[in-house]
Length: 168
Length: 168
Image 1 (cartoon, each protein chain N blue to C red):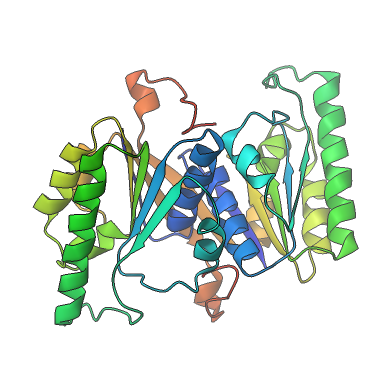
Image 2 (image 1 turned 60 degrees about the horizontal axis):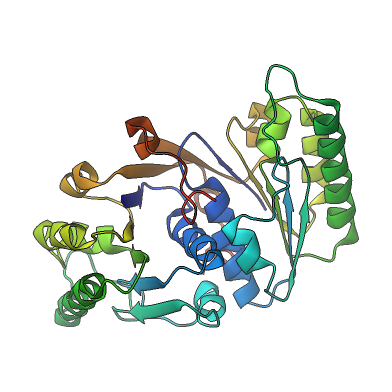
């Protein structure tokens, strides 16, 4: 099955982490591939990297991607993340594969939607979870489950900054 | 701050678990209190119960609550969960407290919304996260962040049953 978590609300990456924790509790083999987030200081990565049964691969840089003008390295990293995703899905080794923020990489045209759809075709029996805002309509059409995280209220709009422990 | 995850889409409990995993990565003291879910076979509980820094308390029974006619034990368990939540928040021991499914307990009138609001007042410096469908409007008004998980598409509607590793 293919699941997508998208929308402007808080809870997309965290829900994929919750799915990982749940699957590990049933001794599933799990792989997390993060796009556009190559920063190991995220709290979730600190905890997750200690758990057996989970492999983590990260792509992107520590810098935010400029949506108007992505750097060459941003394209290269997205491509490398895609190649790793392909390899991981093709291996058949994992029961759950999470592609975190892949929707944003496609939205920013660092990756084509065709490449995202190719990964969907490779999922086979694995549960494939794709997160990030702005999920492409074609990916949504292909998915079996789509949750839109809708922001009803957010403290960011009251000027509260991103907080360690809560946002990263 | 007070966060609510509600709505009919998948991802409410899992996102609170992701928040727990993130907070533990920063060595926060975390408490998870589950309402209406006294079943230790959930995959996430198996994984979470091995993590240091997290205390878990569960209330409810293994049976689903009949919304038309809750049993006496359902009221007693909800009340016990509320008393534990009060104690935990009052202790000031935790930086993150998750009250999983409390919104449903209030919706089913196992707990009054006044009692839920009382817990909000006790949160103090702790981050308080409350999950479950049908969040009460008064709780939403009190919260700093509200995400509505909106179901765009769900395989349950194609007759797929709840799956071990994914739904529990």
